[in-house]
Length: 255
Image 1 (tube, rainbow, N blue to C red):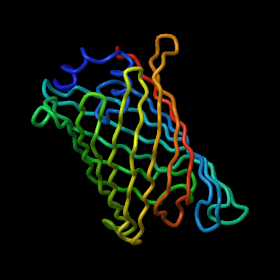
Image 2 (cartoon, one colour):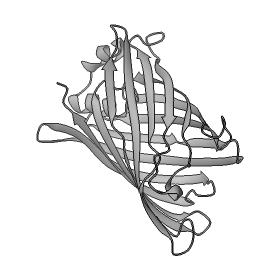
Image 3 (cartoon, rainbow, N blue to C red):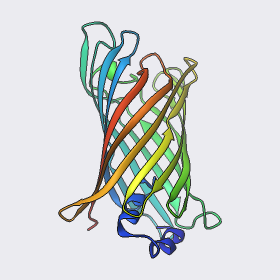
């Protein structure tokens, strides 16, 4: 954990510490975030979609000064009337894995960051649930923690590689985020998961507001909450308007 974070812990409650660690994109704890989203008005046929993202975070200490944080997103999708009226699909979507190499020492004692490769696997169980091609790219995340505030951004660019570099898709993704965590362990987050697909000249700009509360189930620390996502700009097969989401973060013990 960065020295800055250790210096702050004495002034924070346990609830606030754990809740902030859950939303730390370079956490050195084992977390399993699970996020569910319900969407309507999806695609040209105004279909519906249920998406559950299982997102295990596994950190490794690779030296005295560096950590490797792996973040995987496994989407489980069920949708109807999206590709065509009366058609439905369900299964696993494309799995994404990102590997962040992060130094222990924050830049200027304030800015914690990490960088590394990202891989979008062509793993969809149905062609309607994925891109149809594996992609690779680079990702960067940086943030600062100032008392109850966590402010930063994640950025990546991914190219499809099977039919030629970037021939199928070339996607830039930027996610700025602002989190505020209370002393009793409630976290409010404002974020945007903006992406631009260069091949199709297509923007996706959802803006999310969520709230999560820390609690313990037995000896297991957790956060649970929910929120709304407004689609300011939608791609061809994105939702329109407002979608609803629920989230659960589970902290796993370290051996």
